[in-house]
Length: 156
Picture 1 (cartoon, rainbow, N blue to C red):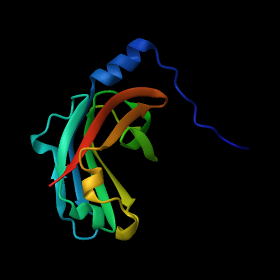
Picture 2: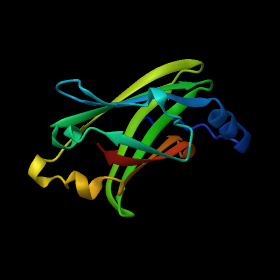
Picture 3: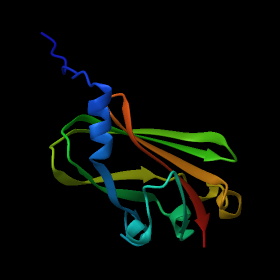
């Protein structure tokens, strides 16, 4: 017998409550092997629609990068999903879907995702990417958008 997770139906008011009670507190980008931090949002306002960040170009040649998101929620989340699309000159070049799942109400959580880079010779040069690469991060409770930010990447 196959079991399916029962989805809860959300009213527009419940979705708004979830949005109002959801907050990204901090984001850290680091090298997965060395743990060198390339960017820390501690001084950024990540509630804006679009933010500009400057990364150390070493992230391009690292084997893998880890993104750590610290978030808080006042409401219970049944199925938290993060969708990340990367756009270069407005054209989508990457699409990732990360599933977190159930989140307890009134909690602060950390979500680490590791993205393995292509070999350095297959990566676009920082001169092409810098200022032209936008990462669109969308977070959903089931199929309801609860958070969205676009991050324009510059390299130092």
